[in-house]
Image 1 (cartoon, rainbow, N blue to C red):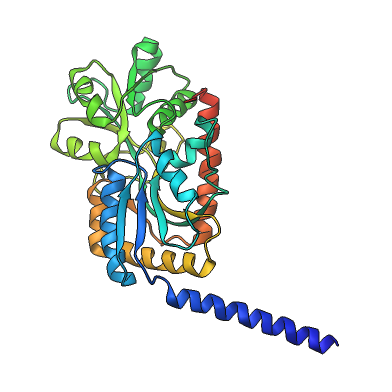
Image 2: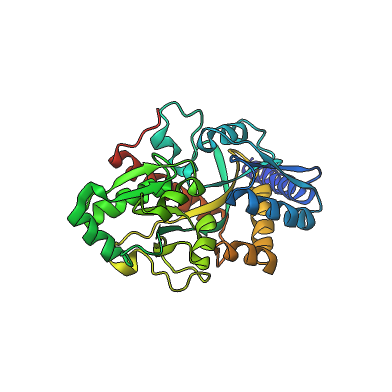
Length: 324
């Protein structure tokens, strides 16, 4: 009897392996929708469209982008959470996805439980910028000015609970200073008031701010993250200037929870292969973002994302940030 049970278990295991291999071999056999939960034209959208083009070539099936903006990315994310977990509806999103549970009390999804983390696509730093004529040249200058002038020091962000707001909160906590946040709908909306000097600094995305720094329209005091950007090698990180905070934004690929492991692994391998091409590397670095090296495994990205949900969530809760 024991040998019969063992034989049955062996056959079941072999059958599961055969099914997995068949799914892996067959996928994809129809077009794939890549949801971007933000409006067209932004940094996430630009990367998603190039990624979709390259994945179409690699997977031999059409990958197309659908923009589902609104509610800080939550509308698009909710549609993906409800989609079939078959690998034909994916989402490329950014760091606000990890912050959402701490900001939105009535969130219709859980970023960890309701999604499959597939891979990280890039890291996306923020820049601390000011007008070219500003007397501030370093983070030390900013800290000294804040200690002298208090809440007269203002900083532009994308809004309450956004990564720029939370980075500003962390700078204040670590440097023991106070600044006053001025929220905007985007970096371009804040630009004129930073250049005029009505706003002391901006903590804004590197994608839209890097060209302005390179052209001399803005001066950068620091970049967030653990390393300098190859496109902005003269801009030191916050940590290099004594503010020990290395967290950084990102672009990441997700699918609904419960995707077949074979499909998840195939997508991870295909995306990571595409990310090594010179075309994708150039697109990512030209914006001031950083390619992922070495490529991220499914397990590494899930762990990193889970850690980010905890890290950014704590900063948001400590700051008192809330949207509803």
